[in-house]
Image (cartoon, rainbow, N blue to C red; front, side, top):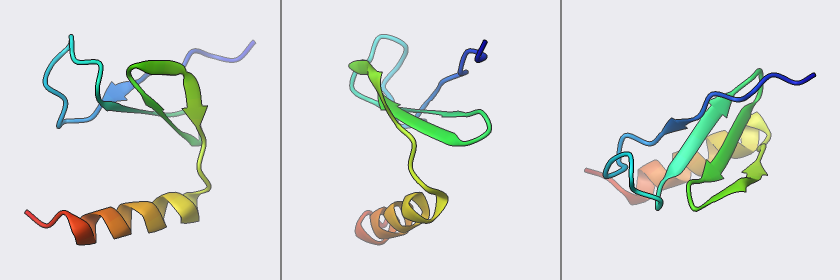
Length: 62
């Protein structure tokens, strides 16, 4: 029986009632989902996720 994933919301989420945020779980691979569509999971390859995060960091400099 697969164990339940422990989801963590993005630190940019507005709070516990916010349904417009990204959640991530690691067990042993990374899984992503949007709070308003929790049944839809993405399991990106590590290289693809790294490329995405690198591109996003370049676009959203703070």
